[in-house]
Length: 114
Image (cartoon, rainbow, N blue to C red):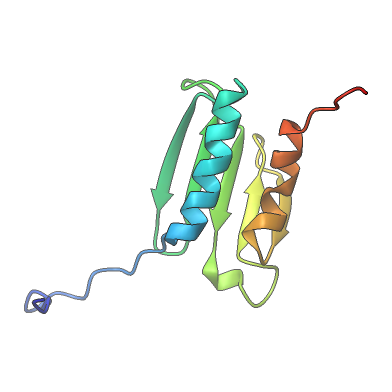
């Protein structure tokens, strides 16, 4: 493979935070199950310098119902994962994606009568 060299006289491009394949598989799996249940209709993904976000919408024209956010700078403190609700309140924050997604996954559980 070739080597990428920066353009002379310019600063290096800003680093970008993203999801690993395993993290994205976990998020998209949850999204697919929520779509199958009829709860979510659309999504958006945002990659920035300091965070990566997955937004899940009930309808396209609304605010996102949930925002799943990864902020590596908070890894040593509160945990880099957060689930943020529709009005901006942090619902859950933690170090592992599974524990953070648990409140959303509970919505999919159904009680089965004997």
